[in-house]
Image 1 (tube, helix red, strand yellow):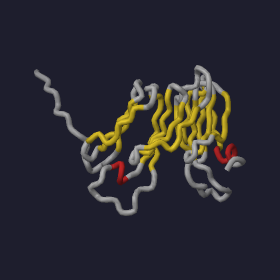
Image 2: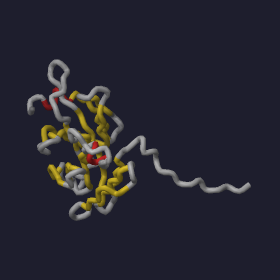
Image 3: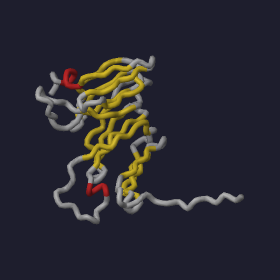
Image 4: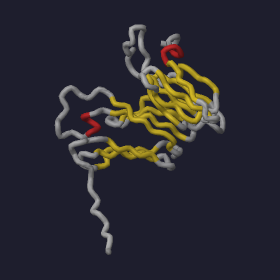
Length: 192
């Protein structure tokens, strides 16, 4: 019996999406699955290894051309965490950075994970833009996604942050395997 290699197929254009990839040399690529063209290539200054990427959808133009790329139809920013301890927000459509923010300090300062969380008012309504929750090997942080301003820092040997079951909580896991459910509203209410 002879096995033959199946032909390579592209995903259906009925499910357009953005595929992003980050590499150890500081390169980031973004492909549009509508036509599989490379829509964006970015090389970070100094070529720091990319440790974490998080795509953030933004409001799209009011009347986009239906033949536009996914990046135009569904505006997206990237949150980029690198081994040199930088957190960056990059507008994929415009090709510009909103902020470059140093996270942590010292040899364990690489941004190992990124997530988002919402802040709600007392009635449970979102207060607007989500917040960036990120971690290095030494601490976890909360940042304002618009300005890159740090709102909170807590030292711990953090390995992972993730959104919780509701939009205004997050899970924080430390190196010993313990995790906590953190209410973002109570942490940052003072700062907003």
